[in-house]
Image 1 (cartoon, helix red, strand yellow):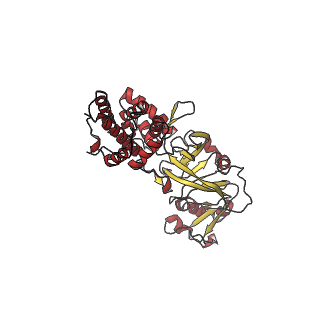
Image 2 (cartoon, helix red, strand yellow):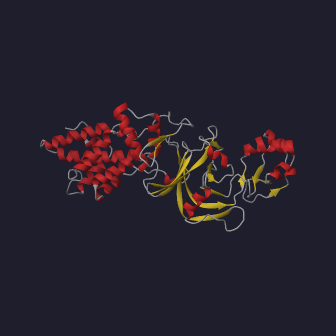
Length: 406
């Protein structure tokens, strides 16, 4: 009999209940589905599911016993196949140790129950296609998984870059419309149901001020934005320049000082601020740059609620997009062509209705944005491109996923 018995696996009860309500097999009528699942299980360690090969061998043994007429072997093969699908699906949806911050909790991967997996499988018009789509997760993951399988065959294991990129890619959406910022290649992609509709260069955080891996939902475009200068830059740069050049430094750069960080803060006279105390770190000053030419936010910004204050925005520093490595920001993402992203999100020309500062225009429907890190990524022509590991993330430990329970 099989090396692993189906009744010793975690989803045993749900699988038993599933078959108790059925009058026909799920798998034995679809050899293509069996082959697709078993083949995927053999290479499942590249997705972090290290018990996949053992489960695949157990399925092969049960199928061989069934072919030889061993009593009960057909039922055991069915249960092992269903258990294998459940465990692998759950592993692929396991959050793991990806360090992604889900600013919108609804975007976090949800591990399905055994009943949910089996119900969906039973309802599929093509079981083999359902298994394939489950294992591939999304087009980016599918392409990287194929490359990792090749490396597994020829090198014994995928490279750290490919393994790390594969792990992060499996947490991206399977379908729908979303914005993808690849921090490693400093590129943004606009994706709709797996197809990259447009892309552009971006500037991301310096290695010592990293752009975090994050997922949130864009809900509005803000025209004529203020730039609220980070407190550390006020201390290190602005205060020092005010002490050196006087208050004219603020006026020349369109800066104004506010009474605090609350929503009802008011503009105050900069002469009332102890700039020496600010420079020494003994006091804080809230400084913002008014909208207009030279504003560091450019003409528009794209915020998504998050505690770190990370967002996408326009920029007047166009020269940075001509550089190969674009890690110059303090964490936010600067856009090569903010108007193009605005057009894709709004479905019209992104033109402000007035010169009013912080003019918010709601999107018809929220659009997810994923800030991830792919040092290996698929290109449109089917090749793979690579990017330097600028943040040193590829050498981190692999994610621990679900294992067989005995």
